Image (cartoon, rainbow over the protein chains, first blue to last red):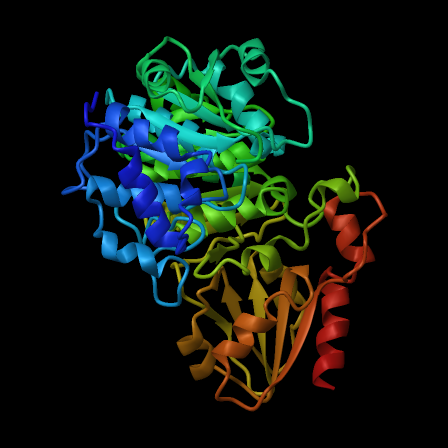
Amino acid sequence: MSTLTLDRDEIVRLAALATGDEKHEASSYSTLDALLVLYGRVLQVDPTDPAWDERDRFILSKGHGPAAYYAVLAWRGFFPEQWLPTFTRQGSSLGSHPDRLLVPGVEASTGSLGHGLPLAVGVALALRAKGADQRAVVLTGDAELNEGSNWEAIMLAPQLRLGNLTLLVIDNRSSTIDLVPIHERLAVFGWHAEQVDGRDHAALAAALNARHDVPAAVVAVVGPRS
Amino acid sequence: MIAMRAQAIDTVADLFEHDPSVAVVLAEISVERFAPVFAHDPSRAVNVGIMEQTMVGVAAGYALEGFHPVIHTITPFVAERALEQLKLDFGHQQLGVLVITVGGSYDYGTEGPTHHSPGDVQALLTIPATEILVPGTAAEADRLVRATYANDHVTYLRTQTVANDEARDVEFGRLLVERRGSGATVIAVGPMLDRTLEATAGMDVTVLYATTLSPLDAETLNSELAGHDVIVVEPFYAGTLAGVVSEALRDQLTRLHFVGVPRAVIRDYGTPEQLDRVLGLDAAGIRRQVASAIG
């Protein structure tokens, strides 16, 4: 477990560098607190060696708002903060969706919804096949769960008893299909599922650091459509 | 005679046993034939159930961790249903996978259009750098699987029930010269070879045999070119190979002709051989079309 001081204001500053947002609206980004907690208190990573064998694997599947992700990666030192103002510009490595071949620290290239969770199931299986103790963590949005491919993987992961897999759902109540309470629906499929306040760093850290015999789902509730 | 599908699976099982980097991800189809891999190391073999998108995604997860995944199911359910997963999870991420399909075009002729897939190769060719393999016999499938399973490309190997009588010494990426003539060039793809040789008997044409369609062997094609007419006899939609053949012949003045599955929904039922006759892809039908092409 990492135990860095969680400097939320610094992440807001860095995200604002990416978006050119003088009002610092990054403060309200739905993923910001969860990503800060993941990279400050949960994931084992080495920014000097992004391919370190013993790292935990994180996949950002949620399609929108990667500015907070890039801000957190820059904060941890995967790349210099001078990259952030180039966000989405021609010639930049930082597009609207992360590309693992361009951005140090990005495990998987994503952007089209519904791909990250099946990928993470495969990563978790592969880690188990290698006898590794590392974990796979995947972040989705609540509306992203409308995609059917997620439900394929949601059915599959408990059957495989992937205790090294964590699904983090950022619930900003943006789903057209009413899925609330999401954690109860996931529990029906056999996940160890719980709901936490998506702005409560201690609650997020406790839920995300817990390991179980079955895959874990943490539903982080934030403000609507943030 | 062992079928192409069975041979391809047995070859994968052999590779799986000897190479710990091989992983197998299935979606219910052919699980029984793959039994040896599950018995040997279930940590590298998983049957996800009837979920083809997740089959591809899970395989890509293995690839991200350095494994060489092999996936397998009925042709349209991976080549068409899960095309975006192949495109993004593998193609976009530059990860390798060997996709082995069963039931090319209308092999499942009694099942109807839901199980037909004459558009599979055209779909896969939209993913840059994808390798397309269409063996004509089981032994050729064995060779091509062994040559490509760990090459870190998206490799698509199409098996069919109708096979040629005798295997050739095929090599990945090579066209073979079956017959030399001077009037025209005929390219026979995979299981179309025997019937193409029968169809062109007595014609003054060169016949080339293609089992690797992408990358196509431009060097051999150009060096063996006979006449100005090039006729491609393909087991999928006619014109599927227009792009790769045109690119290979970009410095030549040629007329291209394509003999393949007509672009219409096939509503007739029957065996592959029966549907071949209906669609003009038996030897007699091919002969008529080749003769018409070269006048």
